[in-house]
Length: 109
Image (tube, rainbow, N blue to C red):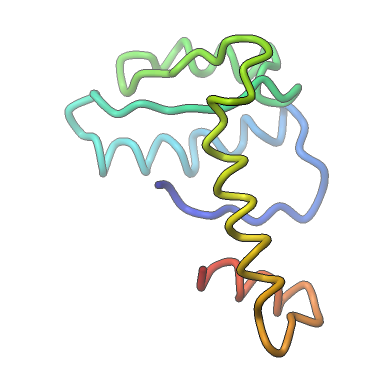
């Protein structure tokens, strides 16, 4: 898995485009330097934006992009990860009380 990225605001296509080269591209080039790494995302509006789609097409030689079939939530491993994180946060004692506490718990998990 790649790094956990903290966003201080709502994700838009343009903000997502700022994440892709800074985080995804560098991670994939280190972990999958052979270009055989596979990147998966869902069809959320920022992920499917024109700017993000164009960037992924331009970098298709650096890693493979798994194209998400429409209406296929059973393939969403991200939902399983989110559920596991939510469960871990709920079981923390004491529970996180601030956004920074929550971020620390999420990074630990």
